[in-house]
Length: 244
Image (tube, rainbow, N blue to C red; front, side, top):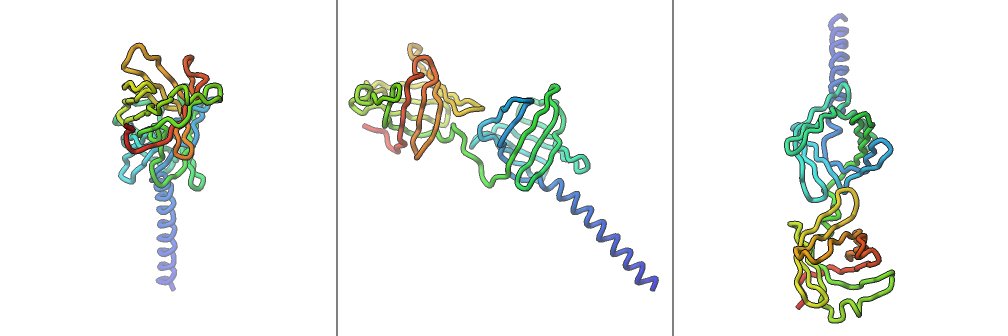
């Protein structure tokens, strides 16, 4: 009888130990995977970056980026008792705000901490592959399909000979052919928190142009934001060979 009782106690102890170990393991394992930021609240302000993702690995390393561009990496510590996540940047600036408190809700995760006296909340969702950012959609060769001024078509007068095209390269440069057949080159810059692109020509006589960006049905829509283009909307279709 004593042997059976001792065996029962030992079995019960082992089950409890295994359960506690599994709970602790689950808390630290939930954070592993690929996550995309859905929303960032800094006090009362919403400051969500475009297509920002984190890949958190089981070997205590992580990397992150925007869209298809990786721009950060480091190591991290996860405290199972406090449910806190502390990333340590190895490819950038150390923030020094301490660990995030982490909570989970199905396929979503929330990080929260105080930064400079302001509460910051980061809401992330689990994803299966890297998200596309505005910059990733922009890259490629585009042919002008329509141009509107105050919502009225001016295509026939702007590009009567169907010459204009835009080539936006992954290396943040662009080249284009104007409606007059001239070749232009320059740089493009994408905004980190909204779908907005700025084109800076190598020709100092050209104006700097900023456009809102949207993609619909494989078409690129640029809506002017600068003083010189705020009444214009350009619609491009993607092509795969340079026009003659």
